[in-house]
Length: 397
View 1 (cartoon, rainbow, N blue to C red):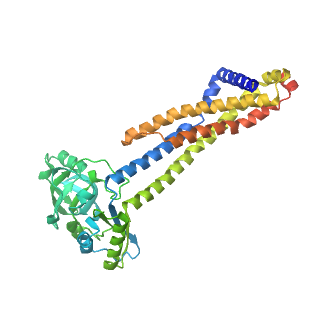
View 2 (cartoon, rainbow, N blue to C red):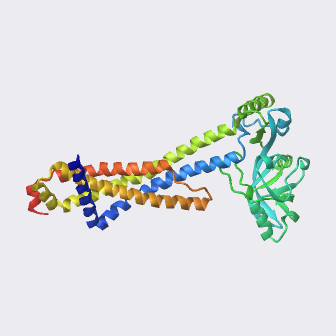
View 3 (cartoon, rainbow, N blue to C red):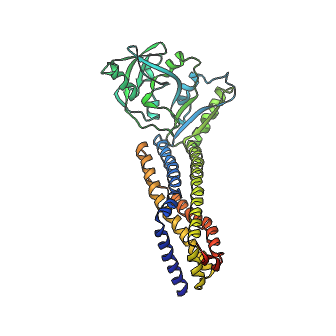
């Protein structure tokens, strides 16, 4: 056992000496391994999933989303039915139908944005966690009035257009004039949110007004909150049953936040696997590069191999020597890739405002696969080296 350990240590020392002697070639082999792409892509996918879940849960897991499931597009949900939801079901404490239309926003004849004109009720601000910086949010008493609440970017554009106080402004949207009654706080975009609205670039108006002025207005979504003590699945079931009685021709689907989170994580999990698969392509390319480096090394060291064989080294000793060099090369590339991939992941998080962490799975996969690549792609050069005839090897380079 001691003899075996000594042989391994000697082989390791010799492998390091040979790799250091061919520094440039070794560096090219390390750079080509590409573990960094696996680390960065898998970590970015895991971080995106965690961030989407965090944003989702910030709204509360008691949220129930009602969406049009398709079917007969000639039938549509009526506004009165949507507004009656919260007062008709004890399982629901608050609800807001959402009527959305793309529009351009004008102030004093100048464009101040183009985005989503969203018709909502008073409850929407609490459901969507919207904070008002100045003025107030829409009230249910504003039904039918041409008043609006603007996002932070729209408010900035109003100021640039010459009106220092957005609350003194009027917006022209689709040929109608709306008085600004509130400005929202700037907020982080929640791309994983079931509400799917870019609040900073949006203009919110009373839902009755949006229903009246929007061409072919449709309610595609209702956001509701389950009453205290009511399980989210029970609330979703009650909402689905209630709408089935009121609007049987419209295909609707009520989904709880827990279900949406599970669906979202499943979709993002597939995306992470896809990113990892794409990044793994670079491992294959890097492995081919390692094999080429080792084949060149075998070709250049034919005399050395012949001398070692003449001095009594077995074919297994030669094979082990080159396998150790290949594994050292790929493991070093893995560690370098880990550092580069972590730096790339940090850059992505810093740019996106996400919480930084490196996926343990990506590290294990990256370093594990890099070792496997070293063995797999090092086998052919090692086998070729071990099969060299010592007499032929000693005759020339």
